[in-house]
Image 1 (cartoon, each protein chain N blue to C red):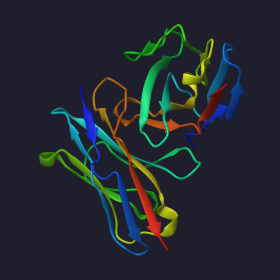
Image 2 (cartoon, each protein chain N blue to C red):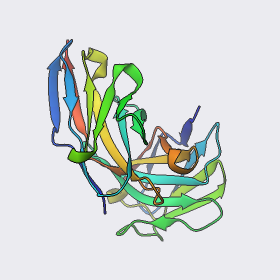
Image 3 (tube, helix red, strand yellow):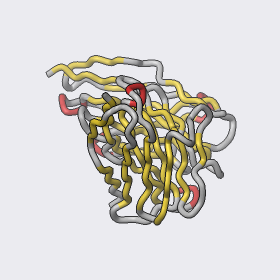
Length: 117
Length: 114
């Protein structure tokens, strides 16, 4: 149980285009999902918390107009990198909360590698 | 804000050696603690977690971790490592009440030499 998928697993795009990444909880419902960015050989940096039916909460320094998050259902959150530039190239990882209350645990997707040319 | 420290950046061991990876957090309140593993080319997987109760937590693949509240530590251990344990290990902390965000340590790269 508690499987999270991401699509696509990797994407190459031209500078200036927008890229949408999907995150799905396959066998559970998640009111809260998270989007992280991971640089090579570094830890995960939380970008935003995605809440079903409401606006995402962005971490300090993350541009909300550049990284659009939509959490339209209890099993799907999307991250759209708008007008992507080479510096946006990175590994984007989503996670979803499973369980309730103090037993909540985050389960992670396999990540999406984005390369902006 | 809470923070997590993993002082061992890269650990190299031979097969069958014992392993202990350090994790310290800074927060005076009640926390939930996690260890995640990221095998080469794969996504993060939960190794084990601590919410309450017995401070010695057993996880998958023979790993265990001990929560020592007085030392703000949650070290990961395995008595005998295997080559397949080569991976990146991340410690993470979440506030026990409210605030669902996980705060990750910088990770420890473990290399096991056959």
